[in-house]
Every structure is written in C-alpha cells, then in structure tokens.
Image (cartoon, rainbow, N blue to C red; front, side, top):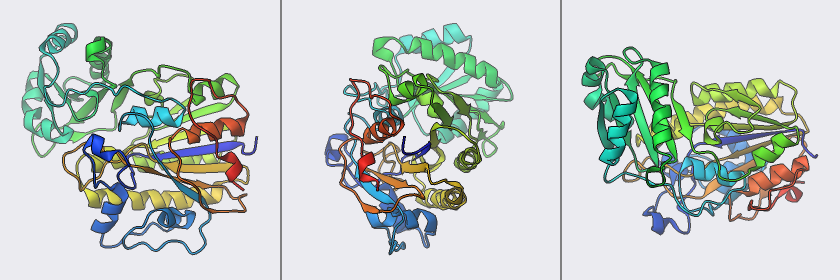
Length: 395
C-alpha cells in the first residue's frame, strides 16, 4: 500500500473537449472547460492551476504553471454513453455497452404514467423533456394547489418527479419515487435513475428547488472496485451522490451534500480524520445548476469556489495521501440543447510525497482510476473489470 488514503473528487461534468467519437453523440465542437474560460472576464483558479490543469488544457485568461506540482493527463471514455452512472461506473471498472433508455422525444408511455398515478394516489402532470426549474415555473402553481406530481425527463435516462415540500412533503415524495423506481425496472421502461426534486414556494418567482434531492439509481450490474475495497476491509466513504450512483452498495459511510462547496467542506473534514481507504466525492452543482441551465458564468464562478476549497484541502494532505481530481462527462454550457456532452475529461493527481510531475499519456478509459486505486490497496480487480493501473507512473 503506497497511499493510506485516496481522495477521488469528481467535478461533475467538467469535460475538456469533444471526444474522438463525439460525432456519434452529436457533440462535435463541445468543450466545457475551454468555453467557460472564454466567457469569464477573469478566471482565478490558482490552486487547480498549480496542480497542472492549465498545463493539460489551454484556458483563456489562465496561465499554465511554470512548475506544476502534480501529474495530469486526459481520459477518454470507453463506454457507450455520456451520463453520470456510465461515467462513474467506468471509473470503478465497469464497461457499459448498451446505453440507458431515454424518453426525450416521446415522454413516458401512457401505461407507465397510469401505473404511477394508480400506485402513488396522485395525479401526474408534465411528462415531457424539460428543464427542472422551467417546468416548476410552468406547472408549479397548479401542482401546489392540487397536490400534483410534476413528472419530467431530459436528454439523460432519468424520470424526475418534482413536488412541493410544503404540500406533499419530502417523505411522501420519496415514497412516490420508490414506486417509480420499482415500475421502471421493467426492461422497456428501465431508466438509469429516478430523481426526487422537492421544491418550496407557491408562486412563479418564489419557487426554489431544495437540497433534499434524492437519486434512485440502478445497482451496478457487476462487482466494482468499491465492492472489493469494502470486502477487504477498506473504508469506502461517499460524499455527495456517490452512494446513490452505486445504489448504496458496500458504502461504509454516506455524507449528503447541500452544495458543491459543502461537499468540499465535508472532504476537508475527512482529511482531518484517520481512515484507510477511498473517499469518493461528487460535486454535482457544476452539472445540475450551471451546465444543464446553460450558464457558463455561473459554472466558472463555481469552479472558482471549488478552487478556494481546494486551497484549504491541499495543506491537510499527508505524504501518504493521494488526491485525484477528474470528471464523469461534459456539459458544455455554451452548447446547443441542455444535455451532457461527449467529452474527454481531465485527470489531475497529486500527493505531497510525489517527487515527479508533468504530463502522462492519454488513457482510453476512465477505469484507470479504479485500477490504480485497487493496485494501491493491494486488492484484485474483478475479472470482468476493465482498466490498467498507472500507479507505477507516479514517482
């Protein structure tokens, strides 16, 4: 075991340019990080820069580090998809060949909606692909007055249910989402995630989604690196929606985050604790609040807030700690539509004990992360898992 603790932080959706196969996903020209930098008047991310991210990715208004502290490289996604689950599962060794079903163009089948109404006892409205904030503005007043569930989807494989915390309540919304998850286990309706989207307010202009979002994801179909770590007695700490993404399987500690800043604060708290294993972090605001809403300035400012917290985390890392920063897909806020974008992602690696630094070769799968973590802790990768460790390259 080279490193006692590994902190793996996923800056959700921070792609660094269209992948080689972007044309297959209609995403040619997408570049989340690059286009955000172009839109910012100033872009202050000194801590991320000193680790080497601007040496990996040319960014407007950001000078690369003269002597970067970390290693940095580009990861290409091997799996057939550009969604959260596919990206995170691949990080932990799973290759996804068949993409999850999306209902973007048609909405959900009427049979599904009828079953949802029958079993929940609520009228369901919406059933379109929509921005979550927009559909609440459009339908929220009536939904609050009549105690309705607002059902919608996106370009991703999701069934989302928005409901008022003040009239329906969070526990009741969760119950309805659990029913929806059960219904959508049918093969021709099987979405990747059912998401509870509680909100407050009674009138347009007052509506606000709360931090009580909850994801009901499919369980990974095979054993992941998380599973083998847990089975061998190592900590598997989740911060943010990691536990949801892996369906709470073999997670030793779950931490709900109210925001990406809160997620970094929780990571900082864990850096002051003694454990041996993996602290796996997802910072969702980049994707949910800014990428899908096509707000490059908001996204850029979120990266700046992340950078401040990164600056607080770095001095807390011990010589036997390893920090890995990456992303799970792109979500270019300057691009058409509101969908994720098929992009390569950064991999930035740092430890205070590293003697070397610099550019490493591009890897053709996100799964090098899981393979590296597994080798570090001396556990065997499941035979079905993909990925080769790059631990030996970290000097």
